[in-house]
Length: 95
Image (cartoon, rainbow, N blue to C red):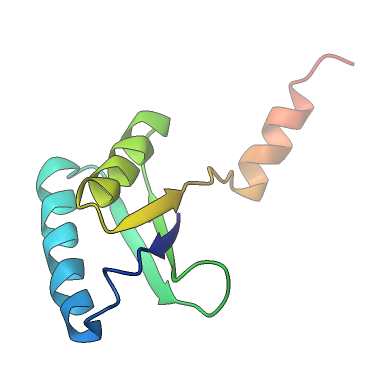
C-alpha cells in the first residue's frame, strides 16, 4: 500500500509517530487476520510503502479504509501475487 500524508499531518513531524501508533493499533484490533510485513518511509510521490499479507481483497481494502479514516492520508493499494502462484494461474488458463 502506498500512502501519502496530507500537509496537515506533517505540519508537526513528531505527531506522525503518534498517529502511526494509533493507526497500527486500530488495524491490529479490526484486522487481526492481516500480517504486517514491512513499513518504509520513502522519498518520492508517496511518503510510505507498507507491505502486508491479507487473506483477500476485502481485508486489504479494510486496512486502506482504516488508514484513510484518520483523515491524514490518501492510499493506493496494490494487490500482488507471489510468482509461483502467478505461474499456476497462467498454467490454468485456456489457450
